[in-house]
Each structure stands twice: as structure tokens, then as C-alpha cells.
Length: 553
Image (cartoon, rainbow, N blue to C red; front, top):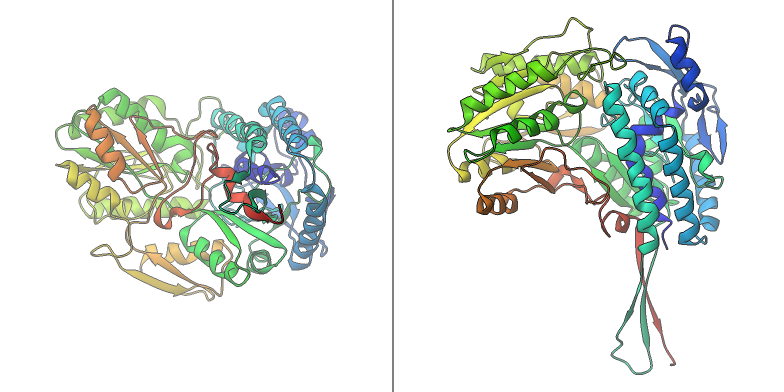
């Protein structure tokens, strides 16, 4: 009944998926090599074995802080993936018959192993922290991983990496317990000779992002990981979406790519669990506690150098407190933020996912400056390295600027002003494609097209990075929906009014950090489908409900 709880390990991709990918080479700190070598693998994991690609091909993994190659992993193709699907499907036929208690014990063991090795895992994350974007990698599970996303939190400093390990491990612990609470129902029958029941059963083989837990005792074939470079990404991804043996696709990444996967999954009527693009508003009313709001702004904007799907993207500050907020946020940035290599003590802001990401951020800032924004802090590339950008604060931001229209995915806080509660809600919710002034452009990215517009260049390049050449993607030139929003006010009635009016799956009221395994995580509109975590929410994504009618009673 609770096989699906194993699939929820997908949330842990930010912590341990990198164990597949790094084979530390000469030039790395010797003390780190000695400490981390026991957990580092340079193979894929299929049917309980560490294997290479059938072709023998590999690709490099680089550190975005230095540009150095830190290891290589197999570049697997369709044949490798098909083999993993078959192995997973075969293992599922047996594993689905195990009890919830047995599976719970394995997840608890996985949680314990993560916590015992959290320091080592954190250092691996920090060293090899460009895992998604640099190579457009796909990892697969099905249990598989499906990955061409930038949600891998690149540039994560060591302190943040430690926190990520504990957060990810928390999902193991949570679903070890949640899985044992999955229950069917006995329904009061309207017929005297019939009994009515509902059963909840596992959905089956799932393709999704996830870590590795060989030592936790998970049987062979239940857990498989296939790695590939972006050259093989389209064919491997298409196979997973179209395979009749795969019952669910789970993906974290852009809305454009998520829509492609949903279309490819349609022919097999496959269930999809999607965490997609975001454009989170951070609203501060005049009645807010300014200290609390600034603290929340720092944690929600600059964690992971602004590269998480729930990072605050648009700061909407009421006019009465606007100037004070900007000044206090600038002071906090000066005091708390330090750019550098994630392994350097005291670093809070690491590199962006790659040089192109830093180019994108620079383009957004220059666009804002050209349209009247003031640079209060930062506003330029960092001399630390080509993938670094200085933490930036912009004032006098308007809705016509790219920092307001698009997900920044970098350390830039653009602060806009509003007058009324109604205006704030309208600005925050202005994310649907039918919004006045919104327009959609489509480009075929199968060829190396040239555009005079630098933002268009970025979009095409980003699509190619994800390995979707040959597909046509839709690109929203205005706001995209988000899964989360932030609200700061001292007015209790306003807290409820605005929180209910915001069209977001998650709203932090006077709180900048809201993620926890105990609460449902997911978005509205084009931010995705389904939820992870929470009592009875996340686990339902991986269950099928069966109605059984017993007659002749």
C-alpha cells in the first residue's frame, strides 16, 4: 500500500544524487579527497550494480566556482534506459508485495545513513555544485530520476549544504512514518448483499529526480539511476515519457520543459508530478515589523545565491515604508553577504550555475538600469570568477523591467513600490498568460538561430542547455506563475485577506523560510501539478485508488 513512499525520496536530489557523479581528480584538496572518497561514485546504478554506459561514453562534471573538472560519469542512451526500465518493472512486481513496515524500516535506515554522513555529503555538494546546469544532465529513477533542471541549487556554500542534507533527510524520516498511515476505507453500502471497499495501491514505476541509498537495503532493481549528457537527453527523456511500463513522471524545472514532458506522456495517459517555474512576490505593508521583513528578505532572496524555485523574485513594498526598507536591506546585505568559493569559511554567496547564468543576470540588471532603476548595491560581475555576480539591490523598479517580468535565478533584489492592498494583490497575481500586455513568442531551438535581442538569445540557449533541440517551446515574455509568495503585515485581518487572495500554492506570512516535509509543497497555475510532503498530500501523488465491490453477501 505504501510503495509510493520510496518515490518521495525525489526531494533529496539536492543532497545525495551527486554521489553518482563525482570522481575526484588531481588538484582537489587532499583532505577532502580522503574524507569523501568512500561516497563518491563515477558509475550509474541499475539493478543493484554500479555500471558504465553500454557505449562506454562519459562526460565531465565541473565546479562552477573554478571551472575545473571534478569527475566524469556515464553518458547513457536509450538502450541503457530501456534496460533500467525493464529491471525496475520486474523488481516492482515483487517489491509491491512487501509490507509498509518493511519499507518504513528501509527509509528510516536511509535517514540514519544520511545523518551519519551529513558532513561528508555536504562537502561533496559544495565541491560538485553545478550538477544540473553545466551538463544539462538527466538522471533517472523508477524508480528513476528525470532531470534537466536548474533546481540543483548550484553554488551552495558549505553551511547551506549542511542544511540541505538535513532537510532532505527529513523527507526520508517523514515518509517512513507517513507510508504506514496510508489507509483504504470501508464504505457504507446502499445494498444489503454488497460490501464496498476502497484500497490504495502503489502507482508503479516512476521516473523522477532522486538520490541513492544502496546501503539502506533496498532490493535490486527497485532503485535505478541513469546519467546522460544533454546530447542524449531528448531521446532518453522521450523514452521515459512514452514507455508503457513507467506510470508516473516527476520533474522539477522550467514550465516550458514541463509542458513538453506532459505532451510526451499523453499517449500513455501517464500521471505527472511537476514543480515548475516561479516568480515569487515578497510583499511588505506599512504595518509590517521592518526588522522581521528584512530578515525574511535576506533568507528568501539570497539563499543559494538566489537560485531556488521559491526565492523571492519581486519585492513589492508599500510606499510608506519603502525608503526605510531599501536602506535596511542594503545594510543587511553589506553585513551578511560574502561572495566566494563555497568551501571557503564565511562564504554565503557562491557561483551561479555557469557563466551563461551570470550573463543572464547581467542582462537583467542592465535592462533595469536602462529603464530607470537605481543600483543601491552591487550591479556588476564579481572578480571572484566568471560564474559569480555581486549581490545586487535595485530601487525604483517598475513592472516593465525584466527583473519584474522574469524569474531572475540570481542574487538580484528588485524593489518596486505600491500604494494600496488591491494594487499589491493585482501585481502579485499578474502571472497568467492572458494578462494585458502579455505576449507569447515561440522559437524552434533545433537550429543555432541568431537573435538581436539578448534575452531571446538566453531563452534559446537555455532551451538547448536542457537538450530539447527539435522541439518548439513557448516563452512567456511577462510574468510566469509561482508556487510561493511572501507577505509581511502587522494587521491580522490583512494577513488573512491577502493570503487568501494570492494565487499561490504556498504563502509565507511574516516568514521567509517555509519549506518542511510536514507541509505540502507545490504551486498553482503553470507552476506545476501535485504536491510533495504534508499529511496525506505528497504521498497521494504515488497512489492509485481501487474500488472493490464484494457481492453475494
